[in-house]
Image (cartoon, each protein chain N blue to C red):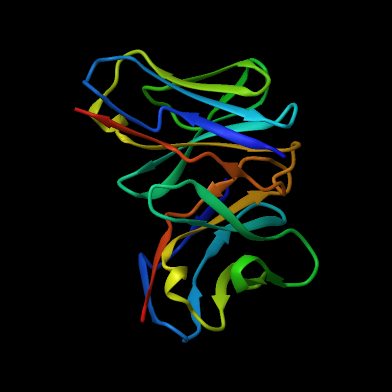
Length: 113
Length: 114
């Protein structure tokens, strides 16, 4: 079975500072890893994904994530946070042998001016 | 371009009443379709997914059922709602059978069971 852990319920960052939202995963075989963002009362929006290749993946809105196989992690990062980045962020994993995506519980990011 | 629609957007239902949430996708054929539930504003639980008409896979045993009567239509139902069925229900679609495909979500349906 595949699973994702997001150890932080909330991350607080000052605007202009770098941000990191943590994610670790468990899956049989090679993983497909994703980050999605959810704004209040809205559906989830795709940010970025890792399938294969370069461990550093760049996505929408200046976000990036680094795949670390030895640590089974896929942390989301941004060099300089914006207040508008405040939202709920979900990490998700799928096994390369299947097609169902499993999501973590989400991390609420609050960027303060 | 592809679009996904969910309705109703909000629903307040008494305990024991039936439920029907509908999801349709436009602009693509043979999509993979999914129902997720998000309880108390956090956490996303996969309820059902479908890879074709009439093919439904259930991820967790529960009071809900799903059906796919047409290629681009996915329905979430219940015969008798429970208080614990309250939550934010999200429909999503993806192309193909690979887990590498991106999910595109609808705007969600907020269900309150009283």
